[in-house]
Amino acid sequence: MPRVLVSALVFGGFGSIFAFLVLNHFSPEGKNDWHSLVVCSGLAAFGVSFVLWRFFCTPHPKVSGRRGALVGALTGLITHPVAWYLAMVWMYMTGARSSLGDRTVNPFEGLLASLIYSLGSIVLVGWFTVLAGGFIGWILGRIMRSG
Image 1 (tube, rainbow, N blue to C red):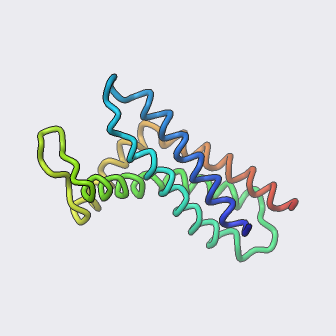
Image 2: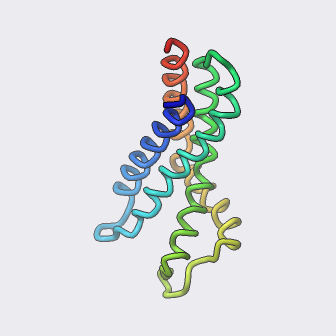
């Protein structure tokens, strides 16, 4: 399996797991309408890391831990707005309603809304996602360098 696909699968898996743990901890009792964000977080981490790994690591025959850490940290940061946007599109496509009973934002409105929402998520958990992404990327870079 190509290195870029392996790294994207690892980041996608960790993105979903982390989103599940955070949302499960912070969501109100009895509210479980956040599952779409867990799926979208994994998809966003997969897609962002795939693109970044191809750009930063694939052209070089020997991937370094430093390059892997850079890709991981950037993935931990850039994934936030992408995940929010995917979740908003998902909610729009499924016909979900807001807490006031209105339709959710459309995909065009979701572009700005995802940036606003991601500011909040970056403040709350971005410090961890950047550090964890950097660490995971460093490990992947070291493994792929020796392999």
